[in-house]
Length: 183
Image (cartoon, rainbow, N blue to C red; front, side):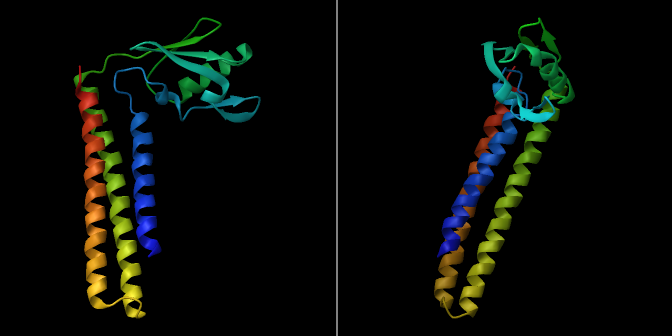
């Protein structure tokens, strides 16, 4: 049945979307993914930062942004400030350095709440997938494509896959919370 394959694909895409969102949460360590969603107004066109500059991590608490076009450095600096990621860029004319500050205990707890909200959104999306697949299976039974026993079996199999997906989301969240709470 097509719904099983799409269920697994859609659960995988939900988990990868969760991971992308979690990468944008600053954990006190320099991570180039922190700048992934930043768009720079480059000659009137919104352009992803990583398309305009090389982003490197010279040490665990510093990100270095080296623009390919030296004239775009002020545009990149402005975009970083407007992105409101809580880091002030230091521009030396050639590169932009972002010093990642140590997180306070209070900030760690706030970020943990943000992470858990992302996780809850992913779990809701997975539960919605279950509902969609179950509805599809029940329609197939009404149409005579499935017997009552087959329906019961398919519903149980779907539930097992959903439980596995929810467990994986919890594991992803636990890893991120652990990373956040490290001092």
